[in-house]
Image 1 (cartoon, rainbow, N blue to C red):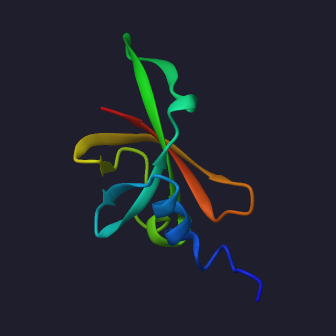
Image 2 (image 1 turned 45 degrees about the vertical axis):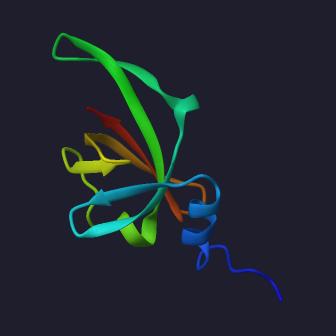
Length: 96
């Protein structure tokens, strides 16, 4: 029987070392994408954006620029979000 990855994505994210993510009323698992940390310069400030991959069907309706997100108990703000590949995943660029 073929696996429907879109339907089973929450299990994949959790099994892939997923961490708890909460944004508004949505909660689930995400995968921290440490390799995609990027430097930013915003209003004269320098820092590092953390990236986390989350399931679009869970977080798509609540994720917006400036939204507050909790990843593994730490608070962040969404700086940018983008849908990946077929749209099942969203990459959140976070600043804390």
